[in-house]
Length: 57
Image 1 (tube, one colour):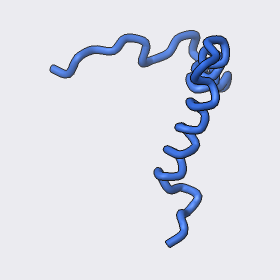
Image 2 (spheres, rainbow, N blue to C red):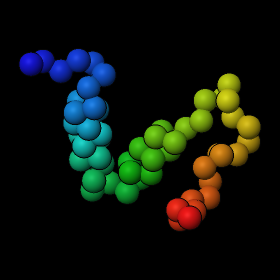
Image 3 (cartoon, rainbow, N blue to C red):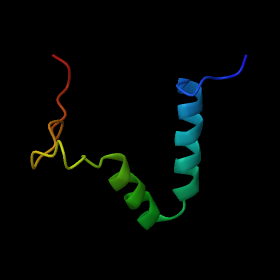
Image 4 (cartoon, helix red, strand yellow):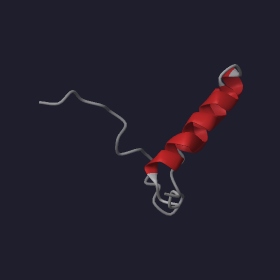
C-alpha cells in the first residue's frame, strides 16, 4: 500500500536522511538545528515557550 503524503514513516525517512547528511559536519549540524527550531516571525514573542524542560511530576 503506498504511503500518503502525511505518513509518519515518510517523515521519519526524511528526518533520517537530513541527519545522515550532516553527521560529519559540525557547522552543518548546527545549521540543521537552527532550521529545525526556527520560530515564524508571525508568532515570535522574543522567547521560546519550551525553553526549559522539566521532568514529569
